[in-house]
Image (cartoon, rainbow, N blue to C red):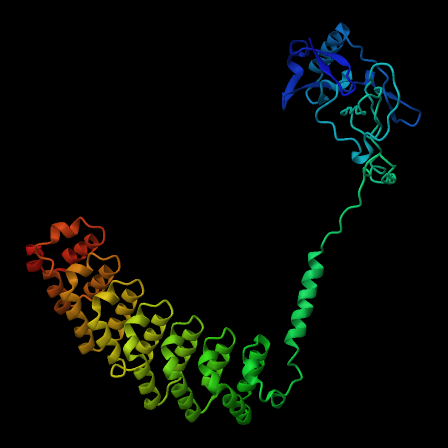
Length: 456
């Protein structure tokens, strides 16, 4: 036998586990008692509704015998004839799983009772149910009846009591107002619509003298792009006239660069030539910018006259290696390789050949080096292969340079691969145990001629 305290401070005697026999189970550290709801334990009124039972469960030694009789009753019945309820509930012990007072009306009513607790059964419940006994500390024990399902949510909350002098703050407070994200989202949408509609009924002539400022506005830039797409010559000329003096700065603007790209598409040849000439002094700096690099690439795509091409070449010639090694600038060089012919691109091959190691051993440079090989003429390709062969021993051990060497081998041209492989004679063992060069050695053995492989 063991004793437990209920919230009112009384000690209750609880049957031991041995007395509960095999029908008892443990759940979350609490003992549960299974018992049937037999016909002998139920009474009904004239309408056929089940009435609550007033069977007293005494404390003390008789409780053990009573529990044992319930266990035996459950064992003798067919499985599933009873339901599992907390073992302590039938003996007036508080269940740790009982809901807090006030939930669905439970705990709001307390019936004064000086005798032992009795199990309660209701017509709207199943054959047996969990009995919850909750009362504030210091009050007498009493039964708490759960409300009918149709009444559980109908109880009105108690009115807030007014604070008395010296009694402290009131116990209940008004809930704080919550911010509705839907209202904020709708407000933001209305604001965005208002911003986008600022230029709905505006004529381009009304913006004369302020077009440069409008270019740097998201919605204003879109408005001007639509005017360029309309193809009206007077509109293109008006925009070109006000944008040309600020073209370099607009190319690096988050919104203005899109207008620059659109203007390069729809302007005339003479206007494009003027744009290229005005941007040339700042072309390198613009190419290094995350927004400017896109505008410069668009400019290179739109070049149509040799005069324009020569202007671009002269602006980039001295900074090819720096652009190749830059996150944004390398795309400008690759655009030149893909759009310009071999003759116009020769300035790139001369710069790469003169700085082979600096380019091939760089994260971005090794990729540009491979694109140079792809777009090269026969003479230009041989120019690059010769410098790769001369630097092969150092490049093959570099995290990025080894890819350039492998790219030459993958061309599978004996005139390129055989001279390259012979550069590794006498170093095969050392290079085979290194992280980067070992991959190249495998490829050399696989692609080498029988004579060269024998020497390897």
